[in-house]
Figure 1 (cartoon, rainbow, N blue to C red):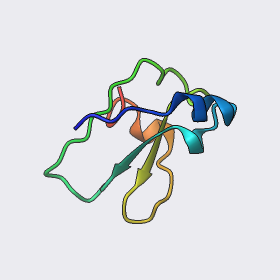
Figure 2 (figure 1 turned 90 degrees about the vertical axis):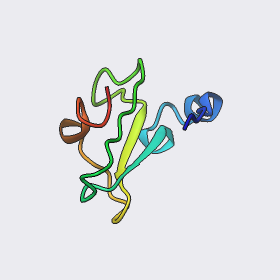
Figure 3 (figure 1 turned 120 degrees about the horizontal axis):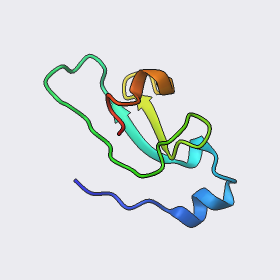
Figure 4 (figure 1 turned 180 degrees about the vertical axis):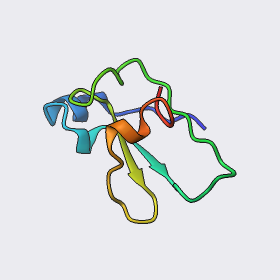
Length: 71
């Protein structure tokens, strides 16, 4: 699957993580490997990916998803 982001909206939000590229993860699903590649996943403060648990909707902390779901 390929999804294109809405960069103008992301920029307008002053690069808020809530308006970043959404990646929903089912942390209990061990049969599916999610991998999100992007060139702006450099740091927690400037991460362009909003990684959330698909069951709870809660944000997954950067240290938990980096190099596991987002590269």
